[in-house]
Image (cartoon, rainbow, N blue to C red; front, side, top):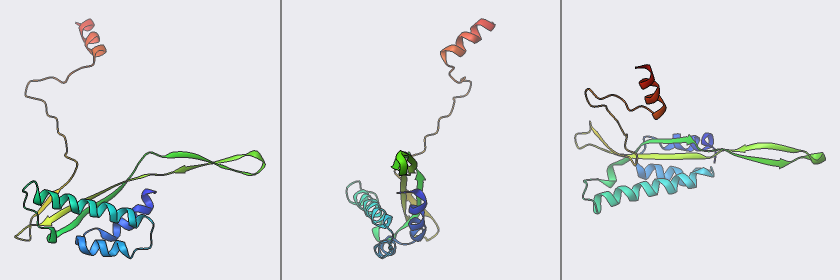
Length: 144
């Protein structure tokens, strides 16, 4: 499924409540809609698991689709037979689809968000130098 085709469906459900998004996907006449619906149901079950098993306070009825992204995946190069023994090349595109569900805060102002990916931030301690590759260490020693 190409990312361009997936984005058409994902743009329909951004910002909607989960129930409305599922209804939209059921009645959308795009082939990728079934895949997105399956992914949205999986995200909903993940939130349900967090609320029941892990003890997090998640109200399933207040969940909405905060973000839905279709990024490029690896491309597969294929060959189609052509007349007179020739061949035409074409590219099959793959989409990586990510859906983030969030819950509206009790005050209505704040949003709580759950995502599968956590950002990794590396910071250097004060006074520490970045680690160099072995070849760079040798060059630094030669200069001294």
